[in-house]
Image 1: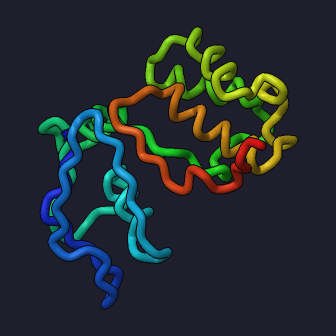
Image 2 (image 1 turned 30 degrees about the horizontal axis):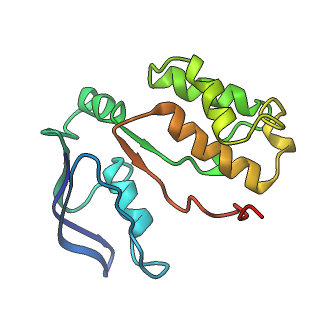
Length: 165
């Protein structure tokens, strides 16, 4: 499924990863737990091809990031948790969900089910700029669900979400 092969990444003299290899199988839910600043978000950025390691490569179902065509193919299979700064303040939550469903060629009818399942109906039709931190965070999670890709990378997903009482 998703493989990280002999990854080495340095930022100047600072070593982030040295010969890191990992394999994730279909159906697994993996949690990376480590102190702040140890490279969890950096690893996600390498998987997404936002950062290029000095050595090693990422592979998904035999595909690697070799050219623009491969990047597009891989990004149809992998979705990452968006940062709240990536939300468009003038759009509604529903608009964002439809956008993600459209980008990954998923049926828009699933958007209503996601809204109901995540109890977002009271604010999903408001502009994002009017939403609280927790509402935006739930929207970001819902966007990944709307993309419904085989690989979902969730970074800091619980930030700003209050427990239900």
